[in-house]
Amino acid sequence: MIDNNIEKVSLKLAAGFDVALVEDGLFPATVSSYTGDIRAFLEWLESKGNIFTGKLTRFHVTAYKKYLVENNYEINTINKKINSLQSFNQFLINKKYITEKVVDLRRDKMKLAAGSEKEVEVFTDVEVEKLLFFINSEEVTSRDRLIILLLLYTGVRVSELVNIKLKDIDLLAMNLTISWGKGGKRREIPLKGEGIEAIKEYLEGERRSNKFAESEFLILTNRAARMDRDAVNKLLNKLGMSLGLKIYPHLFRHTFCTNLIRKKVELTTVAKLAGHASIQTTANFYINTSQKDKKEAVDLL
Image (cartoon, rainbow, N blue to C red; front, side, top):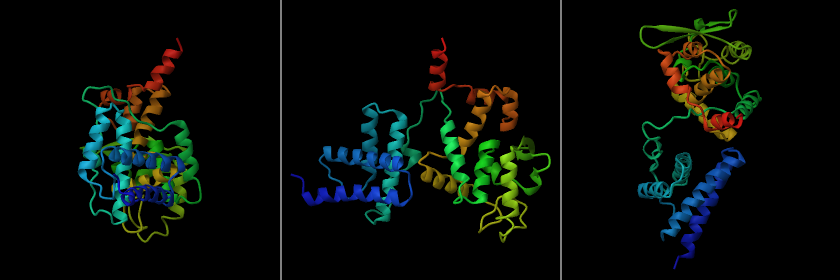
């Protein structure tokens, strides 16, 4: 028979996790998704005669993943549940139930089998609109707004973003020059009007008052004369949690290139804007259409 006190601990932790996510400012739909995943995990543990007491172990994670795989869950579903477990893992550390991270996304998330058709993940039009409305709110700084607009409308890699220098921007010609690859290769990317306005706002306001204002680099932090990749990743993660969206750096680049191709832009032009060494790279990576695109095509018949 199950000890009622032990069972209450399990229920208390599930409820506490729910509250913690709400306090972190996550959207209701995201909170519901995370807590739903964790309740399903706790129910699975209970089905094994193992009532959870707060001691999440590596064995729990690998055994649950094995169960999901053997029961033919979709790869995306498994990875979403692993993400939820990682968040729960951190919650348990914060509450002093455990002291170590036992969920490792690099090891635990599923990967597509070699040779399977790749589908590039991109923002939907609705997600882009949601993102743009949010970054134009008062709670987002001019620097962070600029970062998002540059990622979204230029397709630059994060490593390129943090290395943009003031001399790389021509406000009059509305142009951004990116140095990339070996041998000092350079490419020019036209800037949209929104990007120009965001640059001006940042330069004339927030950046001017930064103690590193004399830095040659465009994007600064309060602690350094150049923002680094980790800081950008943290910003995007925080933004994703606020919006209830999955946001990672290359998602912007994927969206940029995919949208250009969908708008019938020549592949050679997309390759040049993206900084691909070969047009074949662009073709291999972005020509694969999504299931949605395929269905819409067949529906036209």
